[in-house]
Length: 303
Ligand code: ATP
Image (cartoon, rainbow, N blue to C red; front, side, top):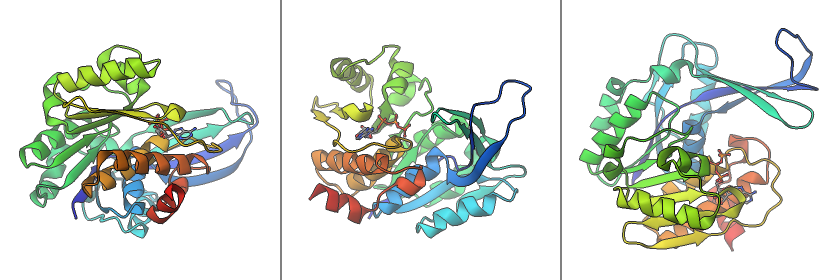
């Protein structure tokens, strides 16, 4: 079975609920502070692990009191954590405030995620084998992600990139990317063209394929997703109609689940269907990692 190496972020999400968001200079009362391990890298790793993948996490935590929890949460999911480094200082922390209408504000303090450098990948790249998959996002320094893509490609490792938060991926990297998975905002950042509908998404995917990316998946929230590859195969997968209560981590769940299915060599339609079901289940529950479904649950949903 191919290994899935997630090269990315781990954050402690600190969530506070308030009646109304404070004005500058104002101190207000909050209630119900909660601590949830998160970060795009960690969320995608958890999604892949719950889908049955053999997952290795590479990234950095700090030397603060959150570090242990960030690592042990991944270990509890069966994720290999030997390649998580400790960097002096704080771990990545997302300060999230939610008001009574559900509107949130987020301050993302990158902490140790911002200290994970290309040199930190040397040891993990020593154990990569062709057939493995690397899964990268954009919550660690771009130079590290770029180095990971270049080195993985040289070793014949399948590269999946989720350029989130939105980043302008340099064109010379396109031919090194096997699968680019991105939402509408991220497509716009890369192609400079908004994708208000499926036809625009088709055109953007075609443009990205023609610029060198082997396969592109544009996720369109509740409108589903569009897959296109360089051979011109084009698959639209509608989302499942579910009672959506919290769409946080829909994308991360889709990506982690897709990585496992594609690593198993299943036909692309089945991989897309599986990932779409995983994401649909995730939006039916509150929270990020807590809402990510297991393989068993996804397969039962698809029956
Ligand atoms: P996030 O940043 O919140 O993790 P994203 O913007 O990266 O999400 P989306 O495009 O919103 O990702 O969603 C990914 C996939 O999740 C969609 O392609 C779809 O299959 C599924 N999905 C999202 N929202 C819904 C919904 N309301 N109902 C059912 N499925 C959904």
